Length: 402
Image (cartoon, rainbow, N blue to C red):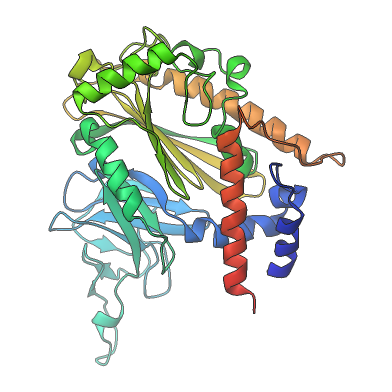
């Protein structure tokens, strides 16, 4: 990988503008992004509630890298590189499940839930099992939200942990269950998918259904122009003891904001999608608590459910949008909530975004493509994302170029 070439591309980037073409479409840029961005960042991978008992696991791919997340026999959540220490096979195929031990399907090397090697048959007497445990991956459980980092030196996370813990606490993430999940294949570069996800400039015309409950005209941290509504919302949140003031760090943002008048959830009609609420104060009308993590994720938590979006790069021209919906662990499907209604709004919105991102990607391939300027008013978070991407990339290049 020619890092000096990438350095010159980032130097070409004009402030306040989108990226040079090759950073969106070239195979080399895809490989660079995996190493410099996804391999060096904290990534949202799901919720504590997805691992309900000892032996529960989540197996996922971060780009080309398999990762395994398990709950051990003591109840602690651990993460490992999902690669057998024998000859490298994936131990648990992508998905989720439960097992008392982790067994490689190739030669049956068997690992305890803490990653230590339990058994390996037909090895010499000099073989030391303690030298062949699964290699760990950094993991953080923040109020029930799980984040991993593949780097041996993860970015500082203390400030984010403190802020998200406070904002997420009322939603009781650990008392949820995964109600539904799906994966949407988008034929667009991951950065175009995320730029689209970081702005609502396109929302009034691109997402008419979302606009019923979601304040699509807001800017930056969903700042509203309706001062009366904002003051009323802040007064109610203060009376409930709910944090709401926007906070942010280099790679994250957290805020609570009001939904459209008459709405108490992000849904097709603005009404709760689950009768069993995660938080019951103010009749379950507490706006949305949004957290976002660069490079790839955002989440909205209302009183009745939580939605988590994650973008994983597959190639320069393909991104998988992973979507998860969570409800109270005691909510009964078909009684308290209905899956078609639960998923409808974000499914509609994601399909609209897929079309927009794919169209954007085709246009970026044009011989006439020139990086254009972001709107300071409507695309501040998209610009923030691209600025962060460039800064992160430059730091990686500086650390790896002699």
